Image 1: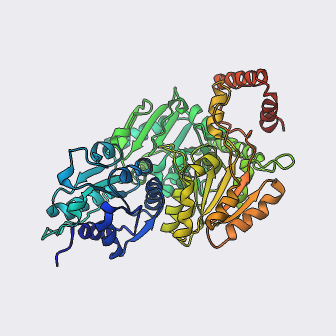
Image 2: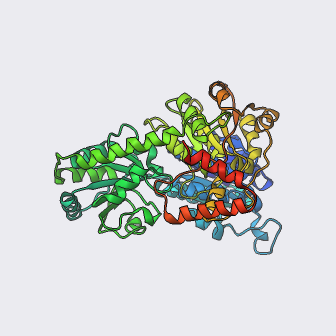
Image 3: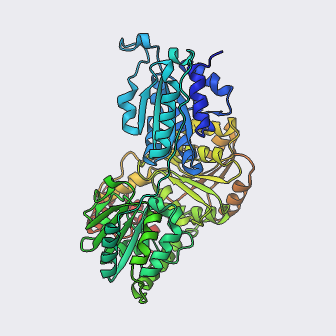
Length: 571
């Protein structure tokens, strides 16, 4: 008996490496879910399709393999959009099967009819419909191949009537994943070396393109006596075992990384596409090396841009770069880094009385977490605390919404990471606003027995938004959150819940929470007045905060101003 189109699609995706399919079942998906039931792919039933998109993206990222999700027609597949935007901008190989109404009804405003292509074209490297049964294997193979080779989301649009038809005798198309070595030409390598050899104070700024280049990067930094700053996305790849590390720059960075990039005379950009132009030097000679030629010079003007894989390029570059003996510049930058980290860690301590600083909560979690833990963090202040106060040791991973910058990502991404690595500790650092946005999928952790650990930074506000309003000189508006006792909510769902309201009780609670064998939630009331301080404070920000303070006092909120000053500026 001939296989149905749905069976051929699932068989091809399984052969491409997919192990899980995340989604919510629906009638237009019946033949797809039946094909999954009879395959080796495991269906993971979520409560909201946005969660499925986040989870599939995280699974693909940490496991470095194809992940799958599937949605019913119309609103079912539309719910995936934000989660898939996140996966796509993280270059995570994910395939979505977006089921469609019957072909005979398309174009007549039938209930739940949606034209998917113009929607998903924005967040995919491939988006095609299987129009006939004869295309089933070919379209599916090309979708998986695009997701894996280009890095991103691929969308297969599949009408319910096509999904149930026999696939017929189709050529056996399969997925090919080429891994070529890409490096600049001899001429380009010589030009890079010429500029580097002429520099006096060279700094390296590395991005996520350095993922497989740690050894070559360390060798080059030693040869040039160059400090290495890095982007947030590169924390896991550059920070471990790195004596040349000077930390991150940018708003989430530290003073030493900011200083090294801004005060060098020659800057080598390696696999980074950092977007904020004010953090690039205005006077330095800049060289950019990237695998994607469209990234060269698109954020800030560069003197020389060349195309190449970072590890291969650095190995070819090394013999052309002059070795240096003077480490004065490097020592100066590294010294500033140790001082900057010591200043940050001063805040990772208990506050006055029962106050719990969010940095202290993060530091305790880092202290007691496994050496191969996977951290996810919600966009906003939790991701800043994760980037600043969790250690990258080479065996840990950090999954954060840095390019898309969406709320509510941490808990769903933890589900995906834990499903990918069930024997590793997976910890979600969730904001109270982010967690409540997709709160229903805490039930998924229970139903699917996914033993994630969720820490809630419960400060009763949309803290990052509130900070942005204050910096603009505005009174905070509509950022207050009236939260439940999240530990009791978790217990009602079948999750082990712990609530902590005093710093003295926190460490014992963290240990208990991490040791619990199943899913567990730690609800911690953190200080809402703790500021995320950038590496350099601009005059406009000082003026804006001063203006906020004046408005707050005049509005009868002087106590808020005093708490803000006491928490952040008085030691």
